[in-house]
Length: 356
Ligand SMILES: Nc1ncnc2c1ncn2[C@@H]1O[C@H](COP(=O)(O)OP(=O)(O)OP(=O)(O)O)[C@@H](O)[C@H]1O
Ligand SMILES: [Mg+2]
View 1 (tube, rainbow, N blue to C red):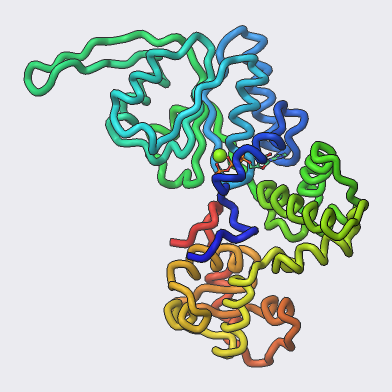
View 2 (view 1 turned 120 degrees about the vertical axis):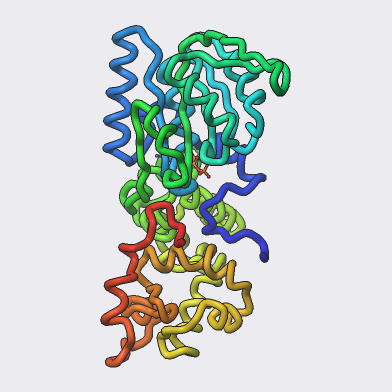
């Protein structure tokens, strides 16, 4: 694939340090997600009052919405040390045993991408979560023995972009599950306001709105676009960023008013102009935009469907009336969307943005 898009929701490696600098440290600074925030605050408050470690917490939702941030906040709010690992890093039960047996009392263990842990490790985790105990297996085959080991009470915070892939027994062992939703434009404005303060940037209210509207409901993208706008303003000698400046900057980076990038728009306009709005098969559509079908399907499509610009039907992809409007084209009277879009519209999209 070409270079990563500005509106990709995954974190770029070189972005890590920049993101860390903008991460809220306490629940009060964490913008949006009102429901999850209130519930989590209660869980933490109650455990503080009881003087016990907090219940295990599962955080699920699409990339860039604040799972890692919340995990760090939980440790901060509990005044507890934080240990970080991830599903892919734990391939053997022994890897997990080593981590668990070195935890201190009250420690928060953050397991990112918890759905990608190996099965034996997962089974060890069940017991550790429930009874704060693990069986360490020593030796192999018939001579193998299990040595039980007590663990200090700890709080597990699991994060996953694919809650659906988590086995039931694991899901059930979390005392609290918070599902993060995409942010509203107003919430993203608050995220941006805070970030601009930290970056020492002057932005007008309308400037924030402009950036927020292009950020696909995702704080990570909002912060990334803000950094690009900052570059643009610096080079153009602009001290105060208003809506026009923000818009011009992001137009230059080819992120349009709805947050579509070049590929998204290419797919949409091919669908509309070359295939009469569809239905057209994925591979044909991909050829028309010179991309791999997989790229179109995993990179462009989820957001187009989520935004209600594109629909998936058994006979192929179709453009919705909104797609024509977005491209500034008249909506044809006899388009194929009427019957199928209701069946396969954005509502059928999984919450995590994947389509399978
Ligand atoms: N509610 C929020 N308020 C302010 N900033 C936020 C919020 N949520 C996320 N951010 C910012 O967005 C960036 C990405 O958040 P985070 O790394 O927590 O996402 P994530 O859900 O863990 O993503 P991934 O699934 O890729 O691991 C962070 O730099 C953080 O500063
Ligand atoms: Mg994360």
